[in-house]
Image (cartoon, rainbow, N blue to C red; front, side, top):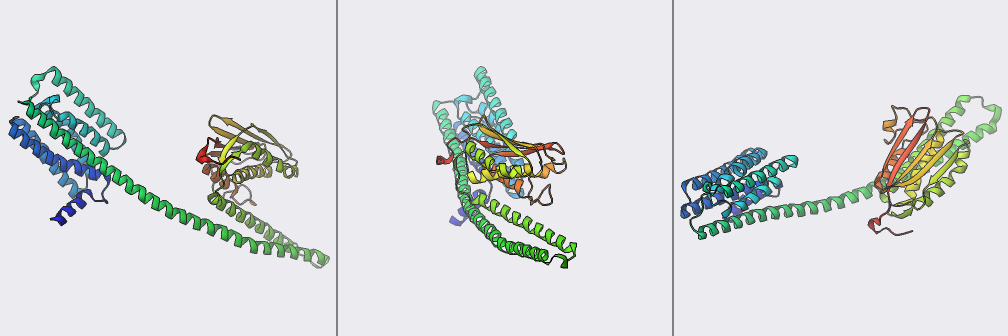
Length: 432
């Protein structure tokens, strides 16, 4: 007997079933049992053949839907049939044949609306729930204005019994519904915690691998670069003995590729630092970006460029100062690489709940074909580029809850625009 009961529980309420399926099984089984009991109660109370027939019809329909859904798995159809045939069509009939609002049917109306919201999704759930509420209110008004339409109970004892039965049944059904809901939530929360723990471990392993690989790559790259420089020095010392321009070009190309790979390694290290960074705190973005801009003035002067800054005072964010500084450095270096003998402008202002930073130049710009892809990893507008700079910027800004975009036109310059949320005591950040 115990095994039979356990098998039935697993069949209709097992963990492998979706929440809506389990709720529907609660509804179908409950509807079958309740309707049979109400039919028996109706027979004992002499409420009339019609009421008994409707309750038996509800019981038969509930059992049929339960069986059909188990065999076919077409639960959506069963949900709709239950709502339309039972909640919308048969419940109003039972309302008039069992005391109207002087009986227990209004409790079943609550039951119907709640289960409709649980079983359907989105707009469909709202539409059908509102339709049910409207129908139930209308029939209550009709019963009030036309009491002759209602079959009342013969005694107060029968009416009280009907109300108690309805109240008890609806409470049990809604209680079972909430129990399943909370149990599912707890199960999902536990699984989510386990997955987060697993993902955190995988992410740490990935980051360590990335960092270790990048560090290991740096050594051979440095050795190769130094050896190439030594070969170039030897060839220069030999002077006229070597008259092979192709050799010099090959060495120059090799050195260029080595430097490009070195920058890619640096990019990998920067990306690894994003996930490993635990230094987010209240950061004075005004001071940070002013000092970052100052450090680039001499670099910009090499191409006769200058940096004009207009940074609002007291701009504060919750973030990693090193990463946010590197974002600005990358953008300034990009602008410098595409601009010559001109002014690069940096503006940072607070607008509502965000800080908007703009870096604009009048340089060579970006083609319309390339512009939509500039933030993809590996995409670059220069042969010497690595394709990590803008990808890094996007990753950092979005990890800080902001957004970044580029506006550019070929031959007319580029403007990089990114936003960051203002500091509002996030995560109890430590003040600088």
